[in-house]
Amino acid sequence: MHHPPALLRSLAEKVGTPFWLYDARVIRQRIADIQFLTDSEGVQARFAMKACPATKVLREMLAAGIWIDAVSGNEVLRALHAGFSGGHHPPAIALTADVFRDNALDVIREHGVLPNIGSPGQIADLTRAGYTGPISLRVNPGFGHGHVNACDTGGPSSKHGIWHADLLSTKDAAARAGLAVTMLHAHIGSGPQFQELHDNLTRLAADFVALLPHFPDLTAVSLGGGIPHNYRDHGAQVPMEPLHELFDTCHRRLCAAARRDLRVEIEPGRYYVAPGCTLVTRVTDVKQTRTNEKGSGATFAMVDAGFVDLVRPAMYGSYHAIDIVGRDDEDPNMAREPIVIAGPLCESGDIFTRDDHELLAPRQLPRPVAGDLLTLRDAGAYGYAMSSNYNSIGRAPQLWLEESGVVEMISRRETVDDLLKAEGSWPV
Ligand SMILES: *Cc1c(COP(=O)(O)O)cnc(C)c1O
Image (tube, rainbow, N blue to C red; front, side, top):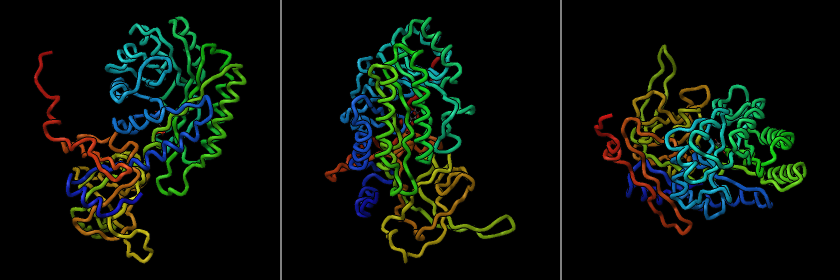
């Protein structure tokens, strides 16, 4: 998604750089894509809100009839604040966690949120907290594929979920505690290849069918998130027709095997929001290192955003499309050269042009000059949500571009007062 340079320049003038720019039209298109996937009776989508918990975004999901998958007590409270309802009829908010910390148990009990537990000992946690409602069990089915290895969500090396061989003993513990298991869940991750995703989901649905006789209280199975977003090539997004067919088939098979109606759930995070936000930053200088006995020289474009804003490249070597605003990147005759994009933090890893192997993976770009704006695209998922206050910089503002063209600031730039707000001196 390319925004007009004049728009970006005028916004940069008004709010400073860096800033995040959400695009309502793109997010609504992604919501419509998932509506198409879930249009069959009995298939329900949840938004994995950890990908982008802004109230504005949550309200888009609410308006579209999407439910919530939260991972902390505070995420649940943010969903309630946005207008979602707790309670088990329907269970519009689920809390998926391998660990209950802080207020998670209190929030589950007080607001009637469906706990989706990923560790057998959490049955005892729930009992101790006085919870007596329905629960969901998150299974580690022994297979799965994340978008990178560090994100594997199923298999022996994954910390997530209850190992499949331990599922029935966990079910027995739940029965002894008087907790009805109403959902089985697995999240096998956003594998990069559609065929792999398709095969994994099919296998998962078959595993769930085999488990049905053991779970008489079941009303739903969740196939998790992991609808991939292609960051490199928007033309190569997942084909929606076969995915629609797959969910439909899973639903029919499960209902047939159970001889009653079961809900099938999916919980996309990144797919909803990844392309719907751009991080806009300013080039402050362009400098060079020179080749010597330690290695080859590189050209560095220094920008005012860093991994405190967008951590995915530094954390996973993730790719984000980069444009120098106002240079026509469609123009094949535009002169390009390998350029490293580096941020302001006191960390040599504060580099946006990285990959799985290389600290510096220079990108072929038109050479910018100081003052140019530079955009990092597809930053809507795990972008602002993962931003931090390292180096005490404060989070950059989030802007929302409505389809009408009106732009609204939905969170302001954090100040030093925000950073100091939680500090004090209390006797303990
Ligand atoms: C993170 C997560 C998701 C969303 O994953 P995406 O790759 O963003 O679609 C869904 N379910 C669970 C349990 C998760 O932890």
